[in-house]
Every structure is written in structure tokens, then in C-alpha cells.
Length: 125
Figure: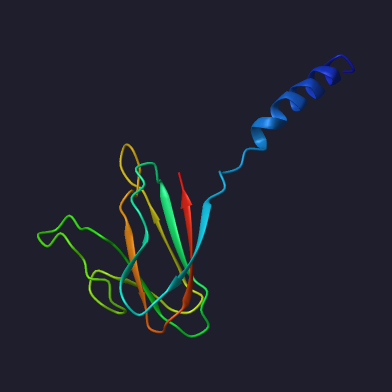
């Protein structure tokens, strides 16, 4: 029994780094969103995930990609508008890449219901 203890201890010590893996930290961008639709983050061909967080107490913020795969290739970003994702105060929205090579590489626009609304953007590559 004592002969197996050093073996088990060595096995646990070498296995520990594999158990301690964690996902990569995101790039974080703080934006102040106005009442006109504007670009908030550009194209990034290595982006795998993006998350938007409305940290405003009162303002609604809408985000939308700058292009679409439909017959109408552009989207007009409007609060509560078609093609836009409206975030209520303290709400977030995450977009993950799909497919063989998952990516969310398009640029994004945003607009707010009040000037100077704070928006946090988290981007994973």
C-alpha cells in the first residue's frame, strides 16, 4: 500500500495544471453612447465572442451589426427598432460565433435613448 502512495501523489501533482485552466480574459472597451447611431467597435476577423452591457440607470441602448446577410444588407440601429438589440438598464447581450471557425467579426453600431449613456463591450478572440 505504501508503494502506491508516491505514485498517486506524483499523478495528482502532474495532473493539477490541466485542472487549473481558465478561459482567456476579454478585451474591455468603455463607450459613451449618444442619441445618433454611431460605430462603437470595428471589424475584427479574430473575434470569437462579443458582449454588450448597458450600465446606465435609465437609458435604453440598442446595438446592431453594421451589415446583414439579408436582401437589405444594412441595418439602421434604433432603440426598439427592427434588426436592433435593445438593452434595458443593467442588461447585457452576448453573441457567440458559430460554425467550423466560430467568429463574430462584423463591426457594430449603437444608439441610446439619452445622451452619454455608458456601454461596456467585452470582446474575446
